[in-house]
Length: 425
Ligand SMILES: Cc1cc2nc3c(=O)[nH]c(=O)nc-3n(C[C@H](O)[C@H](O)[C@H](O)COP(=O)(O)OP(=O)(O)OC[C@H]3O[C@@H](n4cnc5c(N)ncnc54)[C@H](O)[C@@H]3O)c2cc1C
Image (cartoon, rainbow, N blue to C red; front, side):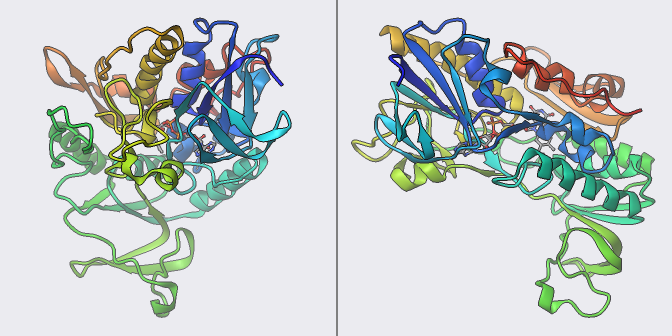
């Protein structure tokens, strides 16, 4: 049993690991970080679609998660990986298995960085081993290599990126079906400018980004059907030769129907499903701390609640994809939350006032279409939204998908630094 007071971080992905890295140099020796994740390995969603299509990439998107890979040797901090947090209490969390002799772990402060769930391949399936994850990616790669006619349901960022990956893999015909008048999300309501922490909406993407991507898709020979949606059947409704709602490689060419009466043919179907914030832990202890499906936080990143005497409001913070900080749910935003939260955890330990936070820096939205194409925007303070030239999207993101620049630095302080192979040619 440690003499230190615990700073618990639930979730060791982009938000949680960045928080640990930011806390490390500032944390007094009297405190230790317990970085907990349900998964036994760290994965890299940004390259998950390429890893699901292009052989060799599966080795670049997963790294074992351990105390040695994250923390310097001899430090008191610990990673508890492959272990789910199953309950939140006022001053402790409960793990699914014992740690240092007990499944209940007391803490001084707890930060929720539980992110979001999304279907495979965007996120690993719950409980999956790293070996099973890479094997399943290899299986998807072999399916994608055999596809000839693909239909992608949903023209959000994930659907567009998948279309680019399939194009690079040589799939001859690709059609994206999107239920709005432009790809992405340019017509969403603007983010609220009031100080109401009990509301959240996903800010719109720039129309010029959609238009640029639509032009590039056309140039790549990828068809886009707008203002329509694919009818998702239940398997028992599907007649001979009709699509049965399953994804991936089909057993021959199948017919898909759209709501507007179009009939499409595909031997490969990809469904671009949005992500679902992981808020179950909070929901079960205090539904009053949920806003628009996210963990409600104030400008200090503290959990707030409509419930009086909520067990979560004194000692809990939340950051990243699971929480209601205004802005897009991106890794960039999650890491910005993490850095701000580190300041407030340290201030709380030292009895200082907390620092109000709003996501600063230029918000970026880069959408690669395979290794050589894509578009992006940067929101700049004076200049507004800038459409980034294609060559910059290609060199900054599309070619190597930021594995070396953003995923590997997560392990830079670890006593055993993992490596990943270079991208396959
Ligand atoms: C295809 C794709 C491309 C993307 N491209 C970009 C991009 O270019 N730029 C960008 O900024 N963002 C991008 N994103 C978004 C980015 O991946 C997410 O915003 C980011 O991963 C959020 O980080 P997070 O730590 O908040 O959550 P997550 O990455 O979802 O991590 C949450 C972690 O919490 C753990 N967890 C959950 N519940 C529990 C529990 N009860 N107990 C223990 N552990 C738990 C999970 O196992 C997981 O490891 C992309 C996403 C996808 C899918």
